[in-house]
Structure formats: structure tokens, C-alpha cells
Image 1: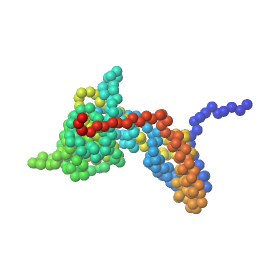
Image 2: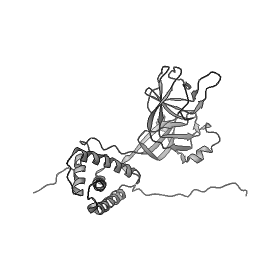
Image 3: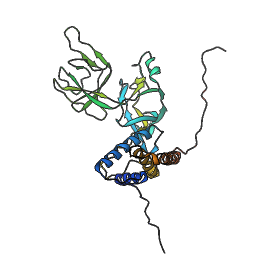
Image 4: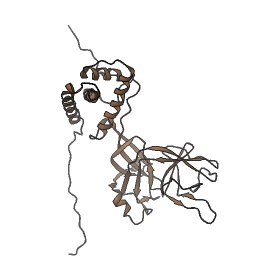
Length: 316
């Protein structure tokens, strides 16, 4: 009597994904260029998926310890967006922790806050979404610094924003203000926060080159005080991992494998001579596969909406 396989680990390596997609287009993989252009199309497909909704397999929980007097903190470079967040108080005392609401605000709201360095328990957060990259500059530090220095003398402020992130050697440093050169003194980066994003504060020699670093970041308000140990606990949507070199599987759950192959076949059909013969049906198959997979890939818990009542001014 026949038995089942006892296995439920089906998946496709990259080469299998590409071969299946080309077969749906009606052509064979004949050259290294065919594989290379398919890898490029698959990376573009994953980019498109990041814009189509919340891909639940890319959710991750993380936290950032907050420091008294420091408002801005870097996020991991592969962060697409933050889905949910709380402030955890007494984070170092397991028996007395409390997760409290912190409201996400826009840049417009944050810009109107009159005193951005006012200290207290953070109740609002502005999330800045940038393209994470490093840009070499022609600037360097004009004096050696130690591990605890929070003011950094630089040769020039050209190309440096008034607040942001720099990398010295392997250390990521945030700064909140600049001071132009005056009275024979060099320009400075002020209110520097050292050893950010899991780097280590280190000494840096005179002339160390400055790398301008763009980072996804959060800025909390009020700025944390010393009344409790705070953590910013968040759930983020991360980027899907890149396609890879051909001997790996994709960063996609099994329920999206057919959708991935269908999407790649549609993308490749746009490149293949005479591809218009199958373009419409491949587009239809891709749309149907996406609808099925994305409908399944959702939060299935019940939701409860509670109206918020607000009272503005007025007398009795």
C-alpha cells in the first residue's frame, strides 16, 4: 500500500525558479545572460512586493535602549517601515515592566513642537525613512577625539547637514547641531551621540575622514529623562533578502512560491521577443496568484475599534 512522503519541505532553489518561469514563457534558458537578467527581474519583483502591502513574513520585533538627553536613534538599514511601537518603562526590572502607548506623528507635527529637547517619558515618535547609504566626503576631523567626546571639530561643514549621522572609521555617530567656524575656531559638530547602531565608541586620530551616513531613524519626544529606564520596542517591516547567487532558496514562504514564479514569468515575458503572445495570460495568472497569496497572508485575529472622545476648551 502506498504511503505519503512524510515530508512537507518543498521549496525551489533560484535556478529552479528561473527555469520554471522561462518554461511558462515558452523559452529555454540558454546562456548565463538569461540567468542574470532573470535574477535582476526577480529583485525588481521583490521591490514591487514591498509596495503592495504588509508582507507578514518580514515582520521582526526589536528594541532600542533610550538614553537620557538623546532624542534620535538609528534603525537597522533594511527597515522598510515600523508597524507598531510602544515605550517600555523599567526595562531592566523584569517584574515591574510596563508597555505604554507612544503615538506616531508626522514631520509637520514634530516641526511645531516648541521645545524639542524637553525631557520626560517619551509619548510621541517621528519616524524618518531615508535611503540607507554611506557617502564619502572631502571633510575630516581637525582634532583627535576620545571615546566620550560629544563635540567634534571638523575641517569644514560643506556637504554636512545641520543634523544627521557620520561614520568615523567603523563608528556611527549622530549629531544634533553644528557650529560654524568663528573667531579662529574650527567648525564643530555638537551634541554628538557615540557608538550608535551597535557600533563601539572609539578614539579617532586627527585627520580621520568623515563619511556622511544616511540612516532610517526615530526621534522621540519628549527627550528621555532619567526617571526610569526606557526602551523603544517596535515591530518593523524589513526588506526581503536579495535573490542571491543561484544555489539558495528565496526569502519567501511556501505559500508565495507560485506567485513568485508567476510574477517572474510575467516580467520575463516583457523582455522576450514575441512575448506579447503570452503576455496577457501570464499577467492574469500573476494577478490571480498574488490575490490568493496576499489574501491568505494577513492578520486573522479579531479587531476591536474603540472611539476616542476629545474635549476642547469650553465651560460648563
